[in-house]
Length: 132
Image (tube, rainbow, N blue to C red; front, side):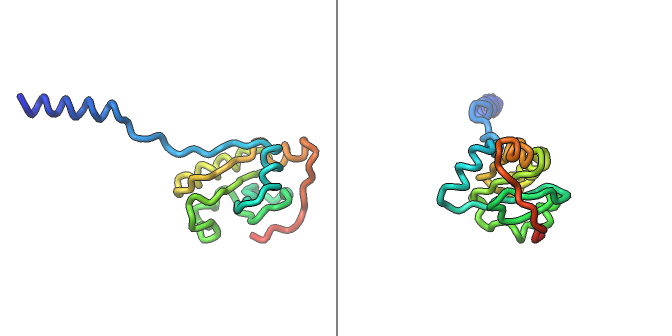
């Protein structure tokens, strides 16, 4: 009987203290991105769109959204590095953000609307050949 009561107690305690929620990425607007690009501090901005459709000035690297796991050598070793992801419309960068979370990155941002929203807000895109 004591074992049964201890089991019920332990079950109740485990239910009262659920495990922490999974990490989430942060959605940011193009105006928030513009502000962030004008601030000091390290960040890594990644264009994950395929095929190449242009880039936002300040982009550090091009990694196709579906190749992040295969190209981890390009990613920062520090998992708390601020990473900003974008694509043309936002869908590929959402997938990339989820992928980075599964790889253990904790400071991940997705640009809502991507390059389309960037241009719609009056900002310009650059068109150069991607380095990767």
